[in-house]
Length: 381
Ligand SMILES: [Zn+2]
Image (cartoon, rainbow, N blue to C red; front, side, top):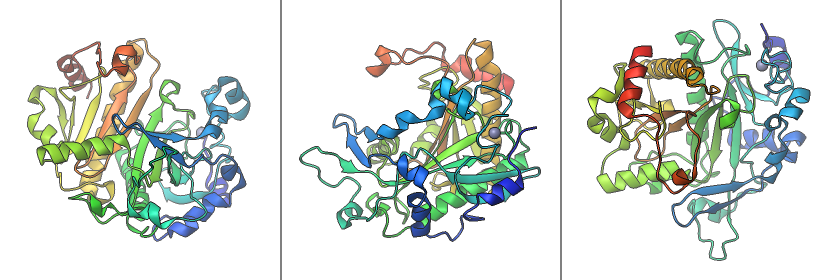
């Protein structure tokens, strides 16, 4: 079975674990890597004045070999399927900042070779005052930070759907440790979060996502998550915040109270998996933590983390069962919501339907009802 060995990992390890890492040294891991610096983004972002959507510019990302099927054959992308030519398994990957043992093999975190955010040479005081400082000439605002990858397992074909629960818990714990270091030990590098009422004393925004499958941007087959730490707030965090100010309630709490009971897929005890009543695409799911006072993964206790790990694994297995039956290539995104006013929840978004023009106008035509999806998901899970 193809995997990266402990010895190969050791050869590329900058840090054994992320706890206590200072931001400056993490920044320097990015700045001092010539390959990474060559792929650095433009550090420029614009905001759509209509809805607050952020556009981060990175002209060099177009050169990513794994986005191109022909190049992927050469460079070891996802074409072979057996992992034999995987750059991660062959140790041809960037420096590691966290390694943890699993029942078999390891989970580890390293730097994204094609970062969407990059540390600036210096941080100007006005950047720290507020994330959206004035930009009257519309030349754009600075966007900066770091972009990491978490490899779920050193084994090529192991991921949330086929790893023991105890290993999945370790993967989540390491993700939480990275999140904690970035948010809480980074004063002076990012705008503080204190301006958001209800917000904890943190700096910057940590975004956690997973892309699986080429149709949704998964450019490498070896199972992984992406983590960005940014000075700018993703639009969906802003949406959750707006919801909070409108309703004076956490979005998670609203869903726990308002989502129809027949759309619940599974209640784990401290977390609930459900189909939202406003499902945009067939089999979209939300996994919601019941303790809505918690906002970040690093605030969850081990019982809660274990239920989240269980829910994610269940949902992914269901997606992998359903999509081939729909005649679709298995592809999904996982996105974590940990912004102000949200509580903690994540969304699982299988790519069961294309995005058309009506959807671009904000009118989603969904080929399936939430009730049908919930019934089928309950049957599978
Ligand atoms: Zn691999």
